[in-house]
Image (tube, rainbow, N blue to C red):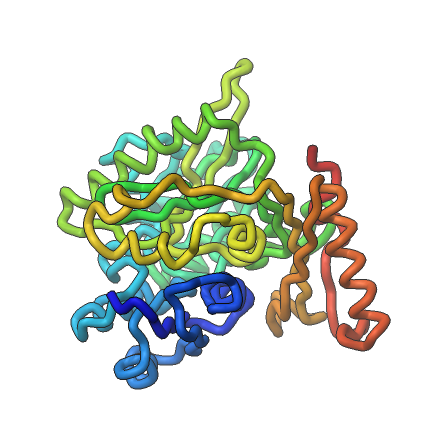
Amino acid sequence: MHKWMNVAVVGNGNREKAMKSVIEPSAGSSRVNSCVLVPWTTIDEVVAQVLDTADLVTIGPEAPLVAGLADKLHSLGIPTVGPTAAAAKLEGSKVFGRKICKEAIVRTPRYWRIDSERDAEALLANWEGPIVVKWDGLWGGKGVTIHHSAREALAKVSEGLPHGPVLIEEFLVGQEISVFFACDGVNGRFVGDACDKKKLLENDEGPNTGGMGAWSPSSYLTSHLLEEIQGDIVEPVLQVMKQRGVPYHGILYLGLMLVNVGGTILIYLIEFNCRWGDPEAQVILPRLKTNFVNILTATLETGGLESLPPIEFYSTKLVGVTIAGKDYPKKGSRLRTVVGSGKTYRAAHLDAYGQIEEMKDSGVLVVQDIQYRTDIGVGIV
């Protein structure tokens, strides 16, 4: 690896801008000469931009990973942070992800694979309670829906089946958290946690989105729970992937549900993702005290994390608020993440929303063109 590196971050969204901000020389990365964002278009176009210019590539979004961008860059001898297409199937196929959980004996909600409308009708004939429907493949955080009637669920299943198998899962009540690990094929090291809000509107109402805000740390992750996640989920999953011949290198994002059963907290794996979350990255990465580039490069070689010193974090609390276009998620996009910081969650919340008010007053944000939730980080202890 070059002492002074030119780093390329694939993607140009809010997550990738957060990654760039902790990589570029101004962030204190002594090994970095420059850091640029390379928009994800096609594998060939990305290769053309990084082939003779980048000493290290790190991939932000899931689509290029599932498409095999990391494989292509590896084949050209370019050190690349991110799993191969085969390993990225953990996110790219919910059916594959559940197979891995079964082999690794990881606790998940009860689920059923549906390959036809008849399968779904038979399963839901006497179903009681909410119904979770998950389409296979990548849907930008919008392929998971919760329904309160079999009729609604069946309609969603029918809509999804042309794209592949569909999963129906039991609905769990608990606290969702996002937990992230850097992985080197055999080891996983904790690199942060957060809570994010997927629903468009306050009080968790409205349609699902890619994420309307987040805070870090999550406030729910104890050292005991982290040990359990490491030992009962991360290590078995990495072992199974290695045994399958698809060792996992890069960032592994666990979407977890903490369920209180008779005073005992049970951890359920809800979903895998093969990259940093958005907006979670925006509130996790600034809390890393350990050099981010050192973490990234340690994932490149099998066992590379073993020589990395303990990963350290700042104690600051961060709250990130997503500013989205007024027609999101039907049309438009998430425009930016406004991140507030403080010694407490309340201070971070007030800082974030204070910045939003300043942006509105200065005309940076035009009220009639945007929407955002006003309750991100409220009431967190």
